[in-house]
Image 1: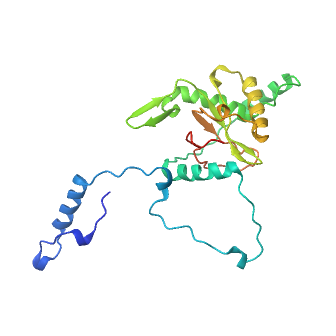
Image 2: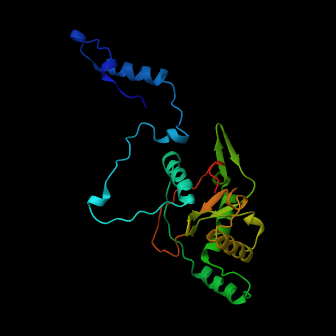
Image 3: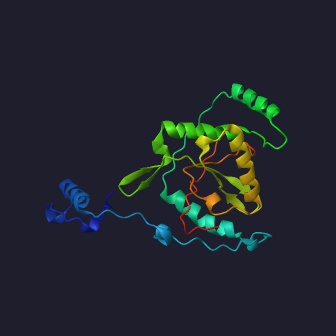
Length: 233
């Protein structure tokens, strides 16, 4: 969208006054000849925005200062970038899961002592894969003039840890049973909270699920957790 700079428009009316045709001609020229502006990347994402204000909070009352964790220092800028650059679309709906909850309870009674608890999130993971297979464009990435459609289904699960949010990845979910997914999800969550996840276990997701079931609420809008190779944890 061209920006109208009134000083650059040459008036052709009486005594150099601007007329409607002058504005239309200027806009047409801008649309035709203005070079496209590349999307900012890296440190230039916030270029052109005013600096964040420096505020002395102590003058308003007592405060406490805590150093950010290493994970927060890495993911904070990445998530801020993603919120600005990646289009976010949100939709809310409701579903009757009475039968699903009854089935979940049956599976729980059949579980052994070594099996992980099967939660509704486990079913959500499997349901997402079925949806991604039905609508493969949701399992894709955009690279310049091409859409890269993945033929694998690795699902990232956001896990809240003492050091910040982490997203371990369950690979090849389409090949695993409900109980397999539940067990692996528990194992990855334990490793995430103890800080023992490998880089491989944190990469390769084609879709990410953020679950706030334990917190509650009726809806929320997560930030897409895309993190480039340089964002190593």
